[in-house]
Every structure is written in structure tokens, then in C-alpha cells.
Amino acid sequence: MRAVDLIQKKRDGGELSREEIAFLIQGYSQGEIPDYQISAWAMAVYFRGMNARETGDLTLEMAMSGDQIDLSPIAGIKVDKHSTGGVGDKTTVVLAPLVASAGVPVAKMSGRGLGHTGGTLDKLESISGFSVEMTREKFFDQVGEIGAAVIGQSGNITPADKKLYALRDVTATVESIPLIASSVMSKKIAAGADAIVLDVKTGSGAFMKTLDDSIALAQAMVDIGTHLGRNTVAIISDMDQPLGFGIGNALEVKEGIETLKGQGPKDLQEVCLILGSQMLVLGGKAKDEAEARIILLSHIEDGSALAKFKQMVGAQGGDVSQVDAPDTLPAASLLVEVTAVTGGYVEGIQAEEIGVAAMLLGAGRETKESVIDLAVGIQLSKKVGDVVAEGEILAVLHVNEASEAKVEEARAKVLEAYRISAEPVPPQPLVFALVT
Ligand code: URA
Image (cartoon, rainbow, N blue to C red; front, side, top):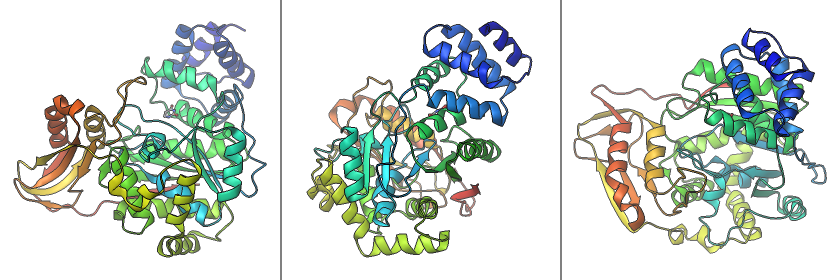
């Protein structure tokens, strides 16, 4: 077999067999096929696509390229949740304890932020002492004992995907539905969950800008999961504005704590209830979404979701007193208001621009090596549909000395991100579809 023939076959719209896909992925992982040939193949896939069988084969090949975690020592149906990446998305901070408090074990491996999107590990590290590193044994023990753990990826998970994703990033081949679907699902399959709930974001701050593309991506991922024996569902949720009001690590943990107390922003609470309900149904703890929602709300109201969060924080070395007193989380030294130039109604908030502005202030990483500041970020004051008067505050930048030089740039970006209309803006859907 020769890579050049497989590139040509895909370039001309052909279908690659399981063996041919294995040849490319294994050859690339082992350094036998060079970057330039895999780049050409990825570009051919970008234009020609892959059918469901090819996408499934690629997923499995990447999942098998490294360690595969066996979660069977943990009792119960392990349900994983994955978001395709949003701005202000702190759902894992809320869902891990919330769902665990309802009896579904959450053994979650999360990531760090890069570019305009944040990462759960960085957010949780805003709590002093919180450790996201532990041995596999301790991870299993913690989930067994308290029902939830959130850690960084340990071991050598999907090295083929890591290598391919880095190459796609610099060859303009990220935005391909079969490549994104197989990349995401290979990690979920290797991480060992029995069932998977996906949150596919749609809109200005998402990979997929249109609803049709988002549904197609969700369907591709659900089909892969189902084909590989993992019960998988996806929701399509709005990313035409950030989720909640806080963007930045400590700001997001604060909002997560408020949500666990039932005092968080409505949109964040609703997305958490929808995702959490799916997790409870797949985890066998509720017969349908309506029952699951009642269970979740009861755990928020009776304080058990918050108590579970404290248990998890304590088990991972975090300072539990900060959960009781979120004002003791890292805080910025300077607050800078961004005010509206014209009055009207907020029509949209370009989530990606807000994410980039937060990154400029130091909340996110420009490159993998960037050092982040857990205290800084952006607190929105207005969301889509709100009335705003000229001169009124749209958002507040939380700034520290190190990022003061970037304040003007960040302020301009936030201002640009807000689209103000003269006409009232009707409420926007938060979740557009459920894909099964
Ligand atoms: N996230 C991933 O893990 N892979 C992609 O290809 C895109 C987003």
C-alpha cells in the first residue's frame, strides 16, 4: 500500500477501506508517513468528506493508537459529557457534582483552555490547592467513594489524534465534520465511558456557525458512538453569545457555585439541567427527561449538589472554605467598565470576540506555553434581548497589572462584540435540537 494512492483515491471522491485508514493512521503515528502526505489526505477529506463507516473506522483507529481506559472497576453506568467548546461554558463545574449527587458516577477527564475557549482544569485550579493530577488508582477510588472526579488527561490517550489535530490546525483542515467527529469521539471512546452526552455549540463562538452544520456534526458523533456500542446523544446549544455572565477562570467558578446553589444565570442553569437530564437518563437514574429534571432541581434545592462539589474539591486538595466564600477566590486588582456608545437592544454578542478579549487580558492561552492569570476576565452586564441606554455598562473587564497594556484592545473587542439594534429583540432559543 502507498500513501500517495490513498490520497489520490480520496481526492477523487473514493471510499477508503478499514485497512487503508489503518495504514494511514498507524503509518503517521509511527513516523513512517510524513506530515505533508497526511496534510494532503486531510485536505482531500475536507473537500470530499467521509461516509459513516469511514468516520467510524478512523475514530477507532485513533482511539486504539494509545492507552484505553477501563472504567469497569467503578460501579454503575459511567456517563461522560463533552462540549465542542464555548465561551463562558462552565457546565462541567456544575454538572460533575450535580449529576454525581443524583447517583451517576462522573469520571471526567477535562482539558485546558486554548485560544478563545477556556478549559475546565484551569477553572477548577482557581480554587487554591485544587489538583487535577492523580494516579489512575486514586481517580477510580475517588469516583467510587464520592461519585465525581475531574482530572487532566493522564497517560497516552489518542496520540494519533493529538498529532493529526496539531497538523490540521496549521493546514486549514480543522473545520471538517468527519475529522472533528472522529477526533472528539476517539478521545471519548478511549476514556472509557459507557454513555456520552455531547453539547454541540452553534453560532458565532462555535466551530459550526450554522444550525445545519451543527446538526450534521452532532449526528456524525452520535452515529459513531452508537456504532461503537456507547449510548450517545447530543444537544445543539446556542453560542451566539457567551453562556452565563462570567468569562475567565475564577469568575466562572464563582458562577458555577452560584448555579449549584440555584442562584446562577438562567441560561447556564437551563443548559446544565438539559445536559444533566440526559446524563441521568443514560445513567439509568431517571426514566425520562422530565423525571430527571425534577431530581436535579431537588438536589440543587436541598443543597446536596453544592455539598457534593465541596466533597470533590476537598478530595482533590482544594480549599473548601473558598466554596463557602467565593469572594476569596483570586480577584483582579482593577475593574474597567465598557459602556454602550448607542442605546437600543442587545441583538447578539460575538462570543469568539469576547473569548479573545478575555484571552488578551490573560484569562486564556494564546499558545500552549502561555501563562494564564486565574483572576482576570470579563463580567458581562447585558445579554441578548436586554435594553441598554447610551453610556450604560455592557461589561466590566477584570484586569491585573500584567495585562493593563492590553486593556484598550480588549475594551474595543468587547464593544465590537455587542450588536445593538434599534428594535426589540425576541428571546433566542438556548437549545435548538436533541440528536439521538
Ligand atoms: N475538538 C477536538 O477535539 N477535535 C477537533 O477536531 C475539533 C475540536
